Length: 561
Image 1 (cartoon, rainbow, N blue to C red):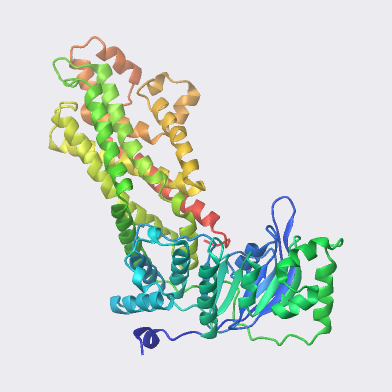
Image 2 (cartoon, rainbow, N blue to C red; image 1 turned 60 degrees about the vertical axis):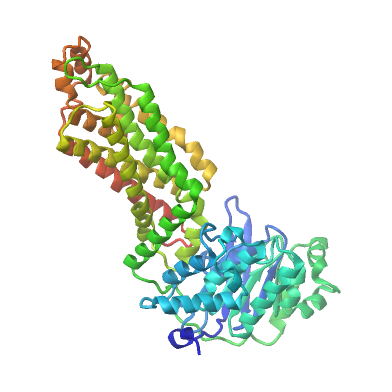
């Protein structure tokens, strides 16, 4: 007897009853039109139809990933709300980690609180053996074959023994032999009591299923029953021609109406006893444990992705080298200061912190939105997810910012400040980086892919250059520019650095004829206490993080937060 059998006994299959499901996409097209069907526990059911017929929409609605616009979906069994596994078409798991490590992280997020490391390892080994992946346990997911990645994606959902499995195009892109092997695995799961529902474009997959659901182009139910009865119903020797048969019919409603009439004339479908299924309530581990697991996983992903790590650490070194080549030493010398150069040094230091934070955050969420969506279905909360990102990236930024200031001070590109003032400069730069990191996460959550995020980089950077007050002092800007400058986090970092560096006294008393006129154009920009600027920067951090949470919650396809 395995450890899993003693801690989490296998669940029985889940029956599904859908009644009057309907959904309309923008533009008014119906992708689901009055779909009613029943799936018995332990069945393997294939949903087929041409592209655009609503197969994926129906699958997600049956799985309660999407809420139907009309109609209801009920899962029977007292444990049904905790027993759903959903495998999207894409193999959406992190590719940097070895397969076994990926599954261990998934298990720590999915298995009940209190599950020990030994039990987790035993469960991972058991799932790997079930899917014939034990020999590939230490191979990074990105180096697995297409069929192995598909099974790995299924393995994630198998960890907590779901009572019902939903799979979107599980055999797409696989060669026939691997596809047949995968279908045999699904049959084994069904024989053990798991209900399996899948969509497919491969008609040959249907022969491995107990029942087939056929959708028309208009999203209507043309048939639901066994493959053999489906061939008789459509008058075909092979279901490979079923789509052609549907398209040949001049009346799109003919086949759905014919099936509805036949079903109404048949024996009534036995009623099932449904529990309270008004909303899925996945069993969740605590927020603190989720944060710890997600933070550890993020750190390991960064370390294992050497190219990403090289960019994260290498780009600040390149920027630092450009600063050293651009600015001459001694600009802050009290006996012969260079006011215009000090402005530029302080601005580019502030912008460097902003740029580092923005680029660190800009690709963090958009590249794994499908993974986040999948893990949300397993109970992962958004706050631990975001804090897991911050917990990994902010310490990296802290190291980079400290190195930037330390080297600049060592090569005489900073004012000769004492320890407390140097700490204040560092705190300002770190606040600037944190605000930019939060802004990067917000933008990353709002876009759909890395290309869109990359296009946003100059759009976000240019205002932080033009409206900060370095190129053109804020008091001399047009009224619109002055108001816009309040929304620039980099403005507050720049002015805090100027206050700590003592530029007012330096420009006033340094003997340079440019000092007093330049100081007059800046007005009281550098007079504000530094803690006020920190408070504003901290407000930006909270504002951007809350907005990121709101965007991700809104994008949650279930319509819940």
